[in-house]
Each structure stands twice: as C-alpha cells, then as structure tokens.
Length: 204
Image (tube, rainbow, N blue to C red; front, side, top):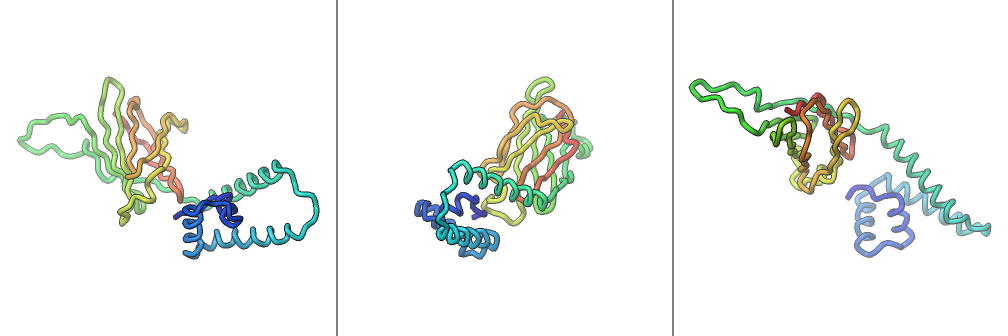
C-alpha cells in the first residue's frame, strides 16, 4: 500500500483503527518504509514526553491547527520532489498514408498514442456533433498488470492555462470527456510522482 495519511498513522499508533485498517498499516511499516517509521518514532517520543507533562492539555482546535500546518509543510516539501513528464506523440491515425487503390474514407474516430517515461496514453477522439467531440483515454504503465499506479488519477483538460474539464481515471486507468468543443488543449494527468502533460492536443 502507499504511505498512509499522517492522521491514519497516528490513529494506528494510538490503537484507534479497526482491525483491517490496522493490519494494512502494520504491513506497510513491516515492509520497511523509512518515512513512515520515522514519523512513528517521532510521534512515540512526543507522546512519551507529553505523558510526563502535568501542564494543561491544549484545546482541540490547537491540535487540529497544528496537524494542518504539519501536513501543509510536508505537502510543500513533497511537491518540490515531484517530476514533470512531457508526453511525445508516437502514433496519429490522421497521419497514416493512404493505400494505393483504396477509396479514401474519413474515419469518425481519431486514434492517438503518446509515451512518457514508463507510461503510455491511448486517446480516441470521436466527433459527436458540429464543433463538439468526445474523448476517451487510457493510461498504462509498462510492466504493470494490476493498474495500481493509474487508477483514481485526476485528469485535467486546459485551454491557455484555464482548466475547463476534469475527471478521474477508473480502476483500469480509463477516463472520458463526453463533450469537448473543438480546439487546442493541454491534457494533464496528475500522478502520484508528478504531472504528465500532453501539450498542443488538437481536438477536431
């Protein structure tokens, strides 16, 4: 499993999690995650010190604010380490040569394939009505068979920096934008280790 949230880890240490959730966190710590183990050891020290303190316990709002500040600082630190992937186009059905002797017909669906690092993004763009199209996509990671790294990802379709459409990938890394006006867009896939971008995506 991926690293549990800070509050979940604290609940585990304090024995407030159910059996199933506690078992998952215990397995994660047992697998040797240094980051979570460091948080665990830090919290145990703080808790032990607090147990010897006979001063007044702070109000609940103070603790909640401290947790928010801690999570905000950790998120900013993590964000600095995120990668930026730019996908490259490796296949476009519109660019395929016409076979000699075959009558030219226009396919209603345009096929596009992009690659970035270990990821591939398969897109299909289908015209639905005048100036409006539907886009279907799937993101896959090379060598992965269970779709763990590509499900539940936020997908954004932006025009000149302004996000116009958002959706999430399903359990197989698939996503859909039902109605998109024709134009030039930027497709962003917000992954756990960074952002994968398809620039200059022309929907027509």
